Image (cartoon, rainbow, N blue to C red; front, top):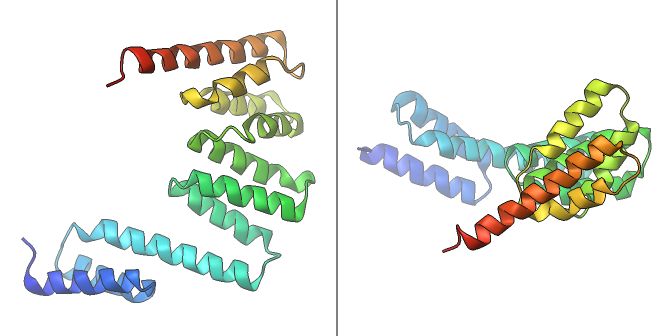
Length: 197
């Protein structure tokens, strides 16, 4: 049961978040958490912190538009907050702005992760190939391959089929991609026939 004072403070903090006054809202949420031992405040506090970070990064990007590191920070924050579609879009903008060079591997890797998370196939095969070609060492390529094969998003079957046809890969890896595509197609059939409502 929330006492009247805590309820009023929560409402005040929520209104501050709506007004993009995150620091003030965070102070109130923290006060509630420390004094009232009110567990329900934590999701609101975390949301306020997250929104505050986005606001800060947007302000820095606006002030220093040539700061690639700040954009990468925002992309990472988007991924941590399951906003992968936005992360794909921002990665694409940053790649277009700064061009493709040896230092772009981090951006391709972030866009690859975001595409896997969101099921966006637009850049997935291209980014996978770009990263694959730039990586050296079996361990790094093994990890990339595991990440690529880890998804069960049925929308990505065509990506696996495209990769299965690419001569960049050995016959064994092409077979892995072909089998993954088949697996996703079977999963799609199960969803459509046996698990549809």
